[in-house]
Length: 203
Image 1 (tube, one colour):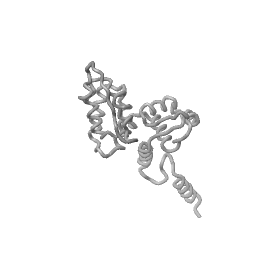
Image 2: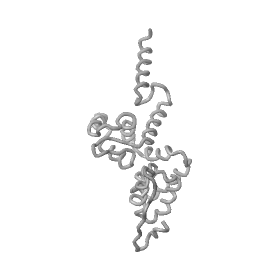
Image 3: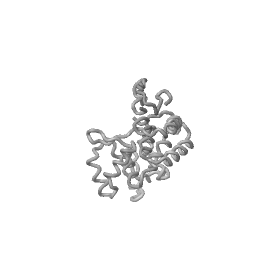
Image 4: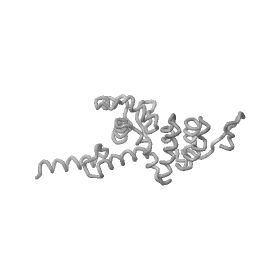
């Protein structure tokens, strides 16, 4: 920020150099486009980047969540981030998940467990029938960078977010076998079907 001389009338050109896939574009897209348009938040921004450790996915997710929020929300989020150990990425990502309402969470978890790679135009009808308000929900989850929608309308997300969502489903069932609200592993689903059949029709 010092090198950029934020607040001056001079023109500055900055280059970000590094090997591929380390988050150069994300660091730039999130930091300068979403957060630092208000100069009073520059020091806050530096703190967030430091706490998150420069992790591109966490920066994008937290940045999307904070975009347009009040200073109070920013300050509370910073305090919450400070309580999470630096190496526990999933807990930092969960801050954005926790901000979703009930229906938005269901849509996110459905995508996590069942619909990655599916055409949104197909699965939206399922959420419509379930009264999940899908058009609003999908847009909110997308704006918070928890999912992506490709040019082909297919639903996609980062593997870390997928793993986070599936861990949430496991925790909701208290890790009890066969009690998950969603099943994504074919072998586990088959085992549960066999287990339930045996219980219902013992030999």
